[in-house]
Image (cartoon, rainbow, N blue to C red):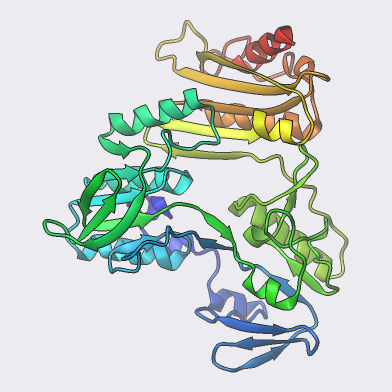
Length: 399
């Protein structure tokens, strides 16, 4: 959706996978802009906001997430947005089209905050990010997060650290004024991007068990502990193949896979969702940022003995013109040499390396395995010893 708001994707219809009309052609009735107020599990009925009651034999919950808000006065003012749904994207783009917008403020420095800072800045709008920490995207090593911060500043995105938001008021020179512990800042729009949580209101009302993450508990077939009730997507948990724990990582690709698994089982087949390794990526201006698996803190929390190393190299062979700096961090278990996680940042090659290392995590490979993986080699794409090989061998020597 940030790419639609930023005018990279020009037509909104390209964001719609299938319209209600297309669904209807295959015998599926879709009701949009319809709120479910209650699920009566005993009666097997769903009650809609207009009072309509719909009976069901099998129920699938795909309620997604709810945006977190800082809970400050004025956060419901016109011109203050969250970005979670397609409707949110339409509202933001309409606002930018209809309202003279000279400056935007983004509160939060996670994935959405980073992608939206690029989208808005590339529209020629002055952009300012307020973040309660000191560096953006705290999943990544501080050295990599600093590279992201440098990239923001290189593109004239102002980044305010250790910020506490206190209120949103009417502005004087712009439509809105954000009051913080650093003083006041004005803008014509404000985006709240401070995080999300699983939307489990209906699940709680039904008495469905939640996992330790606060998301709906499911098994490998996406079924909840309630017979005939499934949950898929951001509202439910997934099994993490590296940690061995159930986690909640709200990403669209995970949701799509879980939906297919639930559908296959509901349709009479037999299928399981084999889990995830936590692969994630985003782009901010000219920088690729990606990670997979566990970081040191998460690895230690589940009983591993993590050891890590951060390496810098080239995305392509050194003698090639235009070689690009690439950073790669590997995390492994000191006791077994098993690869536990990886992070990467660079103008090219970061996502492809993380995808390769995600496969290594999926297969449970050790550093010895990774250090000699058979990877496709050609100078425009990597050296004969790829940074993956170099980093794995260096970390293995440290163990």
